[in-house]
Amino acid sequence: MSTQIGVLAMYLPGRRLEELSFYRKLSIFGQKLGVDVFVFTPDDVDDKRTRIYALSYNKATRSWNRRWVGFPPIVYDRCRYHGADNYRKITRFRQKHTKLRYLSRPLANKWTVYRLLSENENIAPHLPATIRYRSRKQLEQFLKKHPIVYMKPKSGTGGRGIVRLQRLRGKRGYLMQGRDAERRILPATKVTAAQIPVRLAGWGLQSKYIVQQGIPLEMKDGRVHDYRMLVQKDGEGKWQVTGCAGRIGPPFSVTSNLHGGGTAISMETLLKSRFGTEEKIKSIKDTAYTLGLHVAQHLEARFGTFCEAGIDLAVDPSGHVWLLEVNPKPSRDVFRRTGDLQTYRRAIRRPLEFALHLLRQKAAPKSGIRPADLVPPPRQNEFHRDRSV
Image 1 (tube, rainbow, N blue to C red):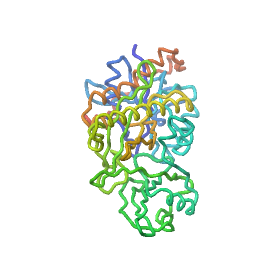
Image 2: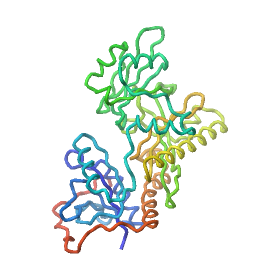
Image 3: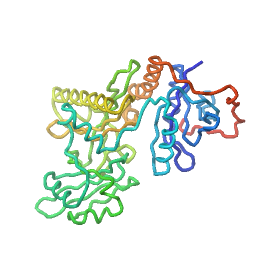
Image 4: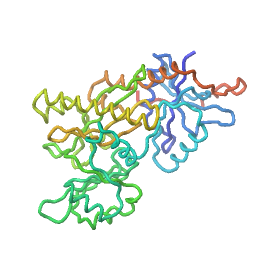
């Protein structure tokens, strides 16, 4: 009998699942490892009968099918909230099912993570100066210290709601650019410090935003770039840097996120275009990889065991490596887009290998399912064709 691993997700409008193509690949890799992967959301749970109406991928028919299953011995949490309603659903689920064993876990918001990381002497030199947004006066003082400033939602993802402010030379004012909550690019506008809160009225700055020192990210053509590193636990429970790749934003964008229209490029290629010598490139890569491992280890010491983190890095013109952000539910698509399929496959496989390691280390908790609770799945009246194949 194969080991079961449940992937916890959330429905988007229309009962769509955001990462269905990733779940399909995860299921196929799972079959090779003897792991039965199924996908479910809090809406699919029947608490009265302690069972789940889950989605399973059938490789032979290349389709998704529904079936009743018991609670799995381990859960891979891929929930991305997208709104207050989803946040409430997943919060209720976690509160109700405290005995479930999770392969991954949510971290705190960006401000809390920043404060925790700044405790570590190996990480602190790589952190841009960061404050919580409290007032216009405080923002003006910060802008006097730093010619470029980024304002970020402390709980945002994918580049949503990020604003970039650049001090104008010889003028009283700033160039304001960014993306709104729907990732739409905001046109560059000249503003005074007094106009900034007015322009962003309704965005809830005081409660939602942090202000961060801007690192020079612009390339010769004016587009911004950064690096996405994926750090994961391997099949022996050890942290490894699975890979790192560059991301280049579209024209007029202040972010490089792939979902926002960015393009992927190998880390080596991007570094070579900016730094001439192999010795300099090797030094930057070594520093970045060491930093990534320090970040994962430090956060695990504060939050408990988890399987992976996406770490956004910047390298300034002098070659100094900066830590921009940590994402506990990272995509791995950047490696597919660079054509590094070996790293892409390893990135999909590693959470499954780590799950098997955890289950070997400790006996899986009993699900509490009684034979009488296990009913056969209904006829295939709910049939999901996998459009991504």
